[in-house]
Image (cartoon, rainbow, N blue to C red; front, side, top):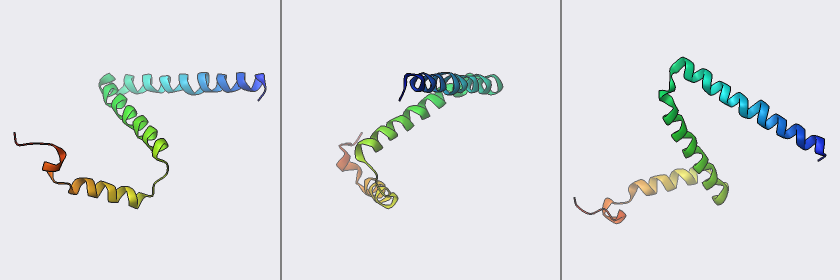
Length: 85
């Protein structure tokens, strides 16, 4: 990639995408208020963490993920280290 290509890509990512994302956020907050900000930040952090986990585990089929979720739900409470209160 040429230096001009690198400059163009940085300009595109920073100016076009990053700044436009903040413009969109400001527009939404002006219309709905900033009360949704904490909720949106929490969701974005959860999505980021899920992407990181997916990268480390690789692709898994949906049925394998559903089976694992069902198996996890089927575990008895006492096996999780939770004692009586």
